[in-house]
Length: 113
Image 1 (cartoon, rainbow, N blue to C red):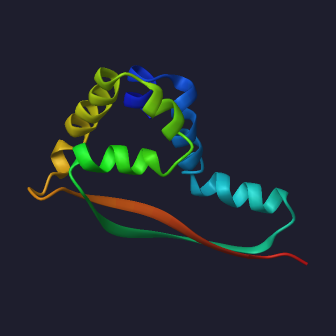
Image 2 (cartoon, rainbow, N blue to C red):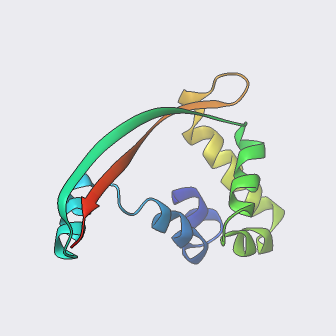
């Protein structure tokens, strides 16, 4: 989100913000409770995700989202700046063949009468 905001613009980055906006389990439970759900159960699930090198992954990933219009309209220099920023950000997860990153997601079950 930060690299897309910095190099392409905040309007384009909003899609990424939306995708990761519900990252607090208490907020998720609260929203479900306020919406009339009961018997809410939430578990965090840790998985390992292997990604292609950022030079390949970033344009492919962005290209599969609504952000593609803004990203593709940006200059080559700005798109390259996003990729370079992501390479720096993800360097600690580099596996030589790509990026190996831990990822946590939530599995939620609830009932609604």
